[in-house]
Structure formats: C-alpha cells, structure tokens
Length: 308
Image 1 (tube, rainbow, N blue to C red):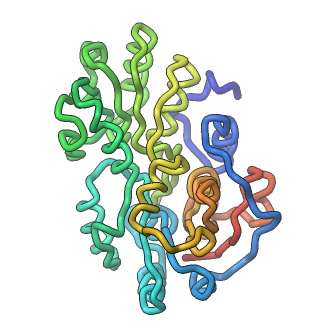
Image 2 (cartoon, helix red, strand yellow; image 1 turned 45 degrees about the vertical axis):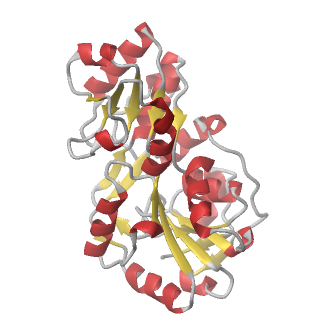
Image 3 (tube, rainbow, N blue to C red; image 1 turned 30 degrees about the vertical axis):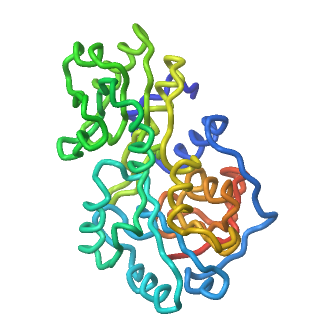
C-alpha cells in the first residue's frame, strides 16, 4: 500500500509496523551491526559482560499495566551484581516523577535519576523556543506547561490549529483521525515546525498495539512535506542524556541497550556503539521466531533474549 494511502485508524499488527519502519528508515539514524546475533535466555546471562544495562519500558519491563514476569527480580539481580541500571523510554505523556511511581507500583525501585524519557530530550530542545506558542497533541494530565509556557492543548476547533506557531506531538491517547486531519489541513495552509516527543510508531498493550506519535508524525511528513523533529529513540538526543548520567569511564561495549523493537531500541543503541539486546517474548515481536528477523530488517542485535 502506498504511504499516502495508509490511514492511522487501521488495525495495526507487528508485520505491518515493521514494514512501515522500513519505509521510513531514511528518516531514522544509521548504525553498524554485528554479523550475527547470539541467543541468550535472559539478561542474567550477560551479567559478566555488561556493566550498565539501559532498559526500554514497554515490552521489557511492562506490557501496558502489567509487569513482565520476572523483570523486577532481574533488575534486583543486576543491582546485586554491582551493575548500573537505567530506563530509557519513549513514553512522553508524563513527567519522569510519574514514571517513578508507576514503576514502583509494578515492583521496581527506580529513582528519578535512573529514568530518562524522550520528554526530557524534547524539553531540552524547547528551552530556547519559549517565545513561540505551541499546540500540543497530548492528554489532559500531561503537564504541558512544564515544557512550554505558551501552549494550547489541541482538541476539535480548527481555529486552534491555525493559531499556534508550531506543533508538539507528545502523546496520542486523545488523538485520532479527525484531529490528525485538522493538523494536516492547517500545515498544508501554513507550514510550521512539528516536534515529536515519542518517535515510536506503536506501543504494546495488553490488548494489542496502540498508535503512538511517530505513526502520525511520519504521515505528516509523507502528506505535507513538513519534516518533523524527533526526540527519543532511535535518535541520539535521548541516548546522549543517558550517556551523560553514566559518565566517563565505561566503554561503549560494556553498555547494553535492551528493547523489544529493532528500529528504535536496537538501531539507536547500535548507533551509540553500545551492545544491543532484543527481547522477543513480550513486546512488538512476540510470536516471531528469531530466524524471521532478517526478513524484517537488516538491523541486527548483538543478543536475542527470550525474556528480560
């Protein structure tokens, strides 16, 4: 199906999502990959090889509101072995303090300093652009004032879309076809910046895959010619925030990015020169056999794990 005919209201499945990621691959980052991947059972098998584990959230720690079985115990095992653990998530709808509480409710003990989100990278970029009025695709409780003082939460009034200086796709929990079409129409009339706080196309939930801002953002690029600015995995801006917190002294090959998605977690980690671990059993690629990965993309992780 031509990109221009793809409608974000269609039911999503992992095969379609991977094909879509490949279609938009020129807009992503570049990286080198190992000749082959090594199979492991879980992250415990890498305790002796890795000093810093950087974990994705959805598909590695949790699926929707459910924790991945054994994940809290695996994090505890890493800590007991003297390893450092960070979370790098593209979830941008809430400030990191909210993530701390959410993970605590799932049995994890992450601190604010151990969680980095794409929202953090977006916020850094917005610091120098506070004079502009930004229209946000977000949910009511996203605290958008923390990101831009001059803001407008976009709903169903076409005049609001024409009244702002630029757009921020922060979260799509309240977004849909009608609002996306209002945004497209406004951009066609007057092109303006589009900033994306979550480059993911989808996220895994208990009942399937949910559309995320990246899905809408790439449709904007296809249909209007306005190329969005992306903040979050696989782009370097989010990984650099983690690297700052890790500090000097840890060589890249002793850092592992762990995720469930080839085109965000694995691609972005490889671009940093880190080792990469693809978790298969809980996220986007649940149900896929490892031997099928080469048919989905040439993005290849260092390790393929059954579970966290």
